[in-house]
View 1 (cartoon, rainbow, N blue to C red):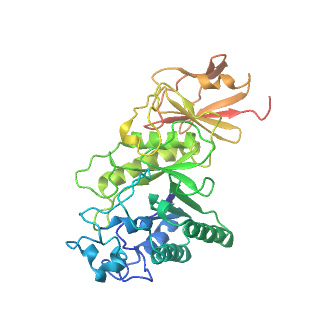
View 2 (tube, rainbow, N blue to C red):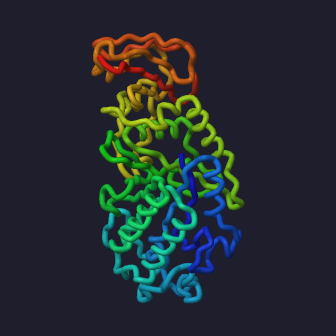
View 3 (cartoon, helix red, strand yellow):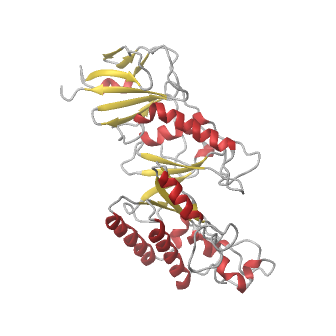
Amino acid sequence: MFAGPVAEHHDGFPMWNCSDTEWCASKMGPKRDVVGELEKAIRGKGMKYMVAMHHAENWYFFPHWNKDFDTSKKEYEGLYGELHNLDNTGNQAIYPDHWGRKTESQDKPSKAFHDRWLNRLKEVVDNYRPDYVWFDFGIRYIHEKYKKDFLSYYYNKEKEWGSEVVVSYKWHDLPPGSGLLDLELGRESELTHYDWITDTTVHDGSAWAYMKDSEYKSTTDLVHYLIDNVSKNGYMLLNIGPKPDGTIPEEDKSLLEGIGKWLEVSGEAIFDTETWDQYGEGPTEMTEAGPFSDNRAKLQYTAQDFRFTTKGNTLYATALGWPSKDFTIESMDKLFDNEVESVELLGSNEKVEWKQTKDGLHITRPNNKPCDHAVSFKINRKDNL
């Protein structure tokens, strides 16, 4: 498991003791090294530490030409970045979209901007040793040399530290194989040959910060999202939005605790598992996939929907609900006769009655449900036939 903060968002305000600006959290505002404090707190809980870096977008984010805004004032360049495109008009920044379609004329980032982009990354890496650096889509507009310089710097640190590190990216902003593909508010519809991760949020929509009276997803929705991702060779990054005073809203906390309670019972089917040769079975089909597909295709899974993971000779079949009666997992028809040694229900001591048939693995539903949201059957297989 991992957790971490947005170390710098599109506002140009680093949340650590940044050496190249006075506009940072340790020198203004809270006057605290937020990135450093969270690094100690998160690692103190035995979790991996990540930082999210959005600062590549800052070049495009501000209308420096608009005299009505502070973005046009040279004394604020430490926050908004160097002035450019001063002959433009209007209130909106010229901001290339996710798909790379051309917009109005925009200067490309300068060498000074690139140097600051790279130096801030190196500073965070050197000072806090993050296990995971998450990039938003702005790195598509960073010169290739600088992206290579960062990747080589960070991956060499992996060897120096003797630990694994991860970089994630969106779309085709880095070459395949150089990092972990991230799908914002979306996921894959099928099992993939490559690792990927979703960044999604507890909010029922696309809110990435605290919003008063926001609508929330349910714990069941989030647990199902996690299970589905893992079965398809994916991971899940889940956003919560602290209040201005830093406290976690009760709604966010309740959802995190609900996911944690489910993992206490069925986490064996998630942690340290691998994919099977198919991700699952069931009647619920994903008709939309990829980035930003979540809000176009909200799914309601049933107890007839199963997702599969493996660990050694063990196969986990997780039902996305509590079956109302005895059932057959049809995908298990590919198992050889007498391959199954035993079947257990995670979180339960009740004996599970089962039988291999030509139609699959038939299971007599246990009497007692061990947890809410989803239940995981542990199918132990023999070492040989």
